[in-house]
Image (tube, rainbow, N blue to C red; front, side, top):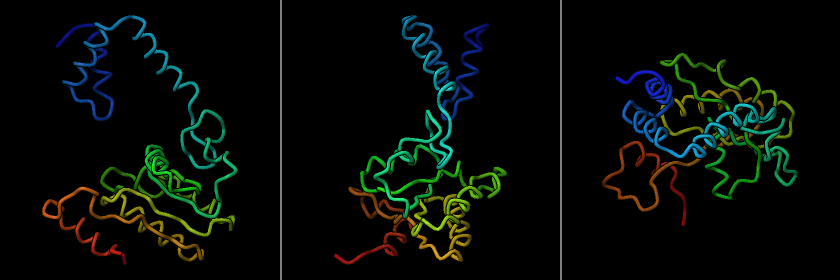
Length: 197
């Protein structure tokens, strides 16, 4: 539609996940009209993240050194390991302030339709960590969707023979939700996961 640099920017922005053509165009024109100092800060932040950020050599969370801050924290227990799909899931769990164990980031979930199998995830690395004998409980915190469930089931089958307790995060009704709007699967899981009060 446009020519030259502005179209190149729209095209590049449109390649980002969750950014459609209209959003890409809106962002591009915002950048065009923004103060040059703001644009330079954005460009610098993009360059800096590519230069400095890498994956933790232990858990595969994002880090600016060989290990992330969670793996370096001596106050955390090594006996409980929480498996998540992506680094953003670590942030979500950390916000609760409820978990004091360690993490393992798989880098996705099993999804045959997208060509992602167990060999495309960091499952081999997880099994190596578990073979050390320190972990007593493995918490499967994959997303409650088809891919996350398939990944959790696969991991549970792999780990059970090792004698490690395998648990799955509970799922069910959200706080403030109405029963009439809950889908059958969510409501079914809420019934399965009910507890005494």
